[in-house]
Image (cartoon, rainbow, N blue to C red; front, side, top):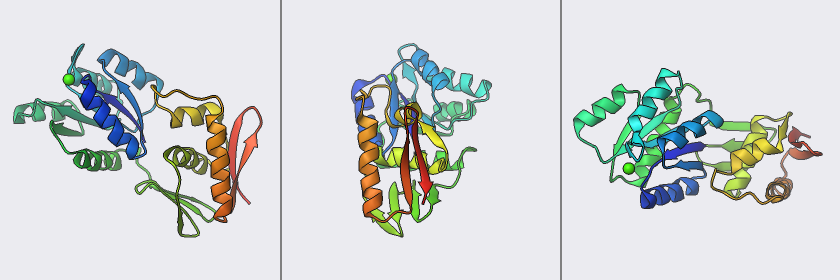
Length: 223
Ligand code: CA
C-alpha cells in the first residue's frame, strides 16, 4: 500500500516508517499539514496516518478538509491527546480510527489493515493471472500454489503488473508506486527489479511473462 504519514516528531516518524516499510508499504512522510495537503493532491494513498499536534496546526483540520472535499481515504489519527473527548472529536471529524501514543507497532498494523478493509476502495486482496497468485494480505507470491520469495520492491512491481495484466504500465507509474518521496531513484533500478522478477517467475514455472514495451514501460501477459 502507499501510505501518507504526517508526523513531525523525527524519532517517531523514523520508527513508524521503518515498521511500515518492513511490512512492504511505500511511505510518503510529511511533517507539515501544508505539505501533506500537497501530497494528497498529487498521489493516491491507501491510507493516511495523521498526527494531531503539528507545527502548522491541528492534524484534524486537514482531516476535516479531506472529508469536506469528499476524500474518503481511510485516516488513522495518532496522538498523545488520548482523552476520551479527543477521541470522540477525531471520530466526529471523520477519522476511521484513533490511536493514542504510545502504541504497539503490531496494533497500528492491524488497525491499518482493518480501516483499509472497511474502505470503499477495498477490493479482494488476492490477484491472480495464469498460475500466478499474489496475496496482498500476506505479501506473498505463489506460483502453482508454491511460495516464491520476493523483495519488497519486486513485490510492489509485480502486484501492479498483475492488477493490470494485458495492459502496458508506464515506467513512471511503476517508479511512483515503488518509491516514496524520500527515496532516491537510481536510473536503472526499475529494470533490475524487473529482470530479477522475470528470472524468479521463470524459475518457478510461472505461466506469465513480463514484456518490455520499449521506451514506455512493461506489460505482463499470460503465455
Ligand atoms: Ca506532533
